Image 1 (cartoon, rainbow, N blue to C red):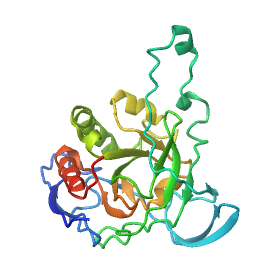
Image 2 (image 1 turned 135 degrees about the horizontal axis):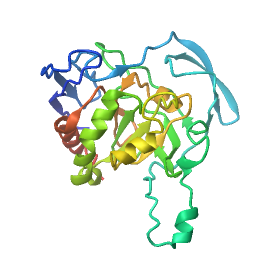
Image 3 (image 1 turned 45 degrees about the vertical axis):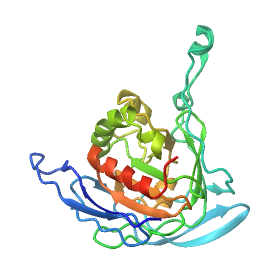
Image 4 (image 1 turned 180 degrees about the vertical axis):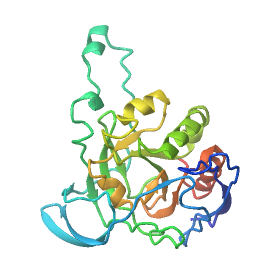
Length: 289
C-alpha cells in the first residue's frame, strides 16, 4: 500500500444547529496502516450512534457456538446470525431489466423488496472478528485489521460479498432516516452516474438501521427517487453488518484494501470534491478494477 496523505475538506450540514454556517473544517486523512487523523466536530456532518457498554454475546460460527467479548453498539440485540465460509469476494448487484420480456411477464414479476417482510427478514452471514468502534478524537483501532467476511443480499435479492482478498472496496453506510445521508445521496448521485468512478473503484452501499416507523421508509423508494446508481446491501433488522464493521455514526465510509484489511474509516459527509480525492487515493493504492 502506498503512503498517501490528503487534506480533505467536508461541507458542513449541521444537524440541529445553525445551517447558515459556511465553515468547512479541515480533515486530514492518511490511507496507510496507521492512525487516521480526523479534525471535525462530531455533530456537524453525521449522526452518532450512542454505544452501549461492552457485553458478552454469542455468535454462531458453523456448528460451533463461540463466545465473544466486548461487542459495543446500541444496534446489537440477542439475534444470532449464522456464519459460514464465503469463498467469493464479489458479486455486483444486477438491475431488474425486463425490457426484453413480454408485458405479461413484466407485470407478474415481484421485486424482492416488494415482498412483505423483506427488510424485517433480511439475513446475513458473517465470518471473522468484529471490528472495534471508532471513537471520535482517538486513533482508529481498526486500521490494518482484517474486516469480517460478509455475505449479504442486495435490493434485487442477489448475493453480495464483502471482505477477503479482492479489489479495494469503498463501503458507504447509510440510514434512510438520517438527514445527512439523504443530503449525501442527493449530492453524490449525479456525480456517480455521470463520472467513471464506478468503473475505477468498487463501491457498495450498506443500508442499515432500517426502521419502518422512521422517516424515508422504505429505503428503496428513497434510492429510486434519487436515482442512486450503486448496488445496495440490506442489513439485518438488528443491523448486524454495521455492528460487525464497527459503524459508529451515519453516514460512514469504509475502505477495504485488496487484502480485506481496513485502510480507512471516515464518519460524516464527504461531498463530491472529497469523494473524488478519496477515489484518486484509492487508485494510488492499486485499488482500481
